[in-house]
Structure formats: structure tokens, C-alpha cells
Image (cartoon, rainbow, N blue to C red):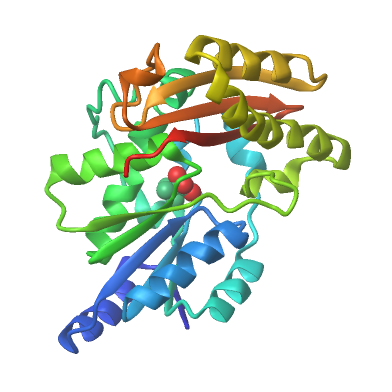
Length: 283
Ligand code: PAF
């Protein structure tokens, strides 16, 4: 496995791979890797000749300076995990390497980015699109892998690929959960033992709501989830939205869509967590 920090080094490694006709994939990450990332890397390694994993905490997608400052950075441990999972290249650039000058590009993803994370974190998805497009230009992968935990991000990246005509297959991969149900997230390491215990209410409630939804309408199911979170001390709900999985717009009845997903965001203490659950799948 090679670890490089400049686009020039990356390009020379990838040019050689392309000359040999190898397929190239990208797994974009912000590091602090866990089993969720490992599952993306394993799938990428199984489906492509060369797997590039980027490790870069992207400043332009943080709308909160403290969040950026506190975001865990663990490059050495990340490289050990990536080596074990069979990644070929780690691209870990500096901020100056990715943003030699200010990126003033403004993307338009409305209405995908006007709801949920887009509404709560102004500018977040513009920053995600800035860095992911820069990574796509630098790597020119055949495929790129993203986790479905960031459900809205995945939809927006697909839209960005469509708008910018990237010839890249976007592969969405299922949420990976701890044995007790907590969705894996780099931010989980920031939770105290007590907060982590409280955070279990999130997945437990979402799973219970699947059963509840069988005998209740959508508004009742939404209220069921909201009440369970609001009744748990230490959890501060930002939103629970039940949406059409393609348009991300809130729906009112189960029958309004063939693909129905519940998306939640909340603070557990100072740590912001997201999760989601599929009520009706697209297939
Ligand atoms: O999902 C993430 O970790 C980040 O948003 C991404 C896609 C790596 C862009 O910085």
C-alpha cells in the first residue's frame, strides 16, 4: 500500500495502473476509520483492481468551527486498517494541496439540499460537492463507494455526478451497526460511556418504529419516534423526517411513495449523530 499526499504523486501512480488497463475505485473518507469504512473498502477491493482511499477532513463542509477542530484525526491507525483491508493507495493531502486557492464554486442541488441536513447545516453539501468533485477529478475512478448512513449525501453525490457528467458509478453501501445497533460513525468516539448508552435509543427507536408503522399511519409513526427521542434525557432532536427516498421530500402518507426512508439527526450531549431506516425499499 502506498501513502501519498500530493495530486502529482497520486496521478503518476494511477497513470501507471491505467496503462495496465486496471479498474480504479475511490473510497472518500475523512479518516477516523471504523468497521463501516472497512466494509466500503472490502467491497471496493473485491470489485476493482485498484482501490484508492482518500483521508481528508474537508474544512469547507463544516459549518461549525469547533466541530472541525474536534473532528478525530487518526491517520496512523487509519493506514493500519486500510493496509489490512487491502487498499492499494491512501491519498492523505493537506488542506493547501486540495485548496491552493479558495473554492468559490456554488452548486445547485435544490430541492435535495434544502431539507434535513441541508437546512440544519447551511453550506454543508456545497462543501461536500466541492471536495468530492475535486477528488473525482484527481482520481478519475471508475467507481466510488459511499455509506448509506449519510443518506442525503449519497443522493446529492449522485445528482452532482449527473450534473457534472462524471463517468463514475456511485455505489451505495448499507449502514454498518455495532452489535447493540448503534450506527457506526467516526463521531461515536467522542461520546462518553453514558452518552453512548443514551445514543442507543436512536437505533432502538427506529427499529421499533418499523413494527409500529405496520399498524399506524405516517404521522403517528413520526410522532412515535419524536416522542421516544424527546423523552430520553440528554438527546436533543433536530429532526425526524419520513421522506421519499429519491426526492428526499417529506411525505404525508405511506402510499405517497414506493421508497420511504426515515432520517433522523440529533445531538447526544455535544455530539451530532445521524441515522436512518428504510420503511419501504425501492426494489
Ligand atoms: O462522508 C464523508 O466522510 C465526507 O462527507 C466525504 C464524502 C468523505 C467528503 O468529505
